[in-house]
Length: 109
Length: 158
Image (cartoon, rainbow over all chains, first blue to last red; front, side, top):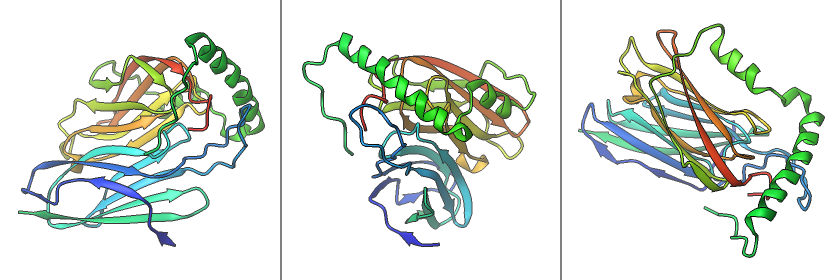
């Protein structure tokens, strides 16, 4: 799969103690075009991020299905338990098959 | 992030009228795409799969009144020990009066530590938001909250 970058802000600690619950907040820049046809609007085809998948050290910790009912610039907050030093991989799946990926390291002490 | 520009001089009355007018084209779009049209009752039935939801354990944090339906903050907390045997597996967010009632589904597991998720959603009009949380024990917890929307998300392109 193609993997381009996406303007996104990932807020999470770089370090955590083992067993600590950390909060992760993700904000991506995306118009989330939802194919509405209303007066004064130019109809555009639907193009949204339909899935956000997050893996931590290879295991999936969040799988979110998004719809046109999610606001533009999709924001997601969730938590995870710091288990081992490893990489968190964030993948946004867009209509049309594009996949955007970002990686963030978490050091567990 | 980009926010819609403030609409100066727009009174509450005209805003409501515009909101009502915007619903008609939305219905036309839905008719044109019957494959995507799913009713709230059908969504709830498919999530519940014959189970009776428990009216406890869900904390749904949302503003009571939202000026702008294009972006409404939502925070969900489920009472769960989030252990290997007893944890939340899925959290569904449903909005009855949106063109697509199935707004979002979060799939999590014991590695989340806490059953706590947040996002921002679009709301077409004043309505009740329903949250269904499935657990590994097979139970479903249901929570609902009414949100008053002044300017619906159908009105402009945000």
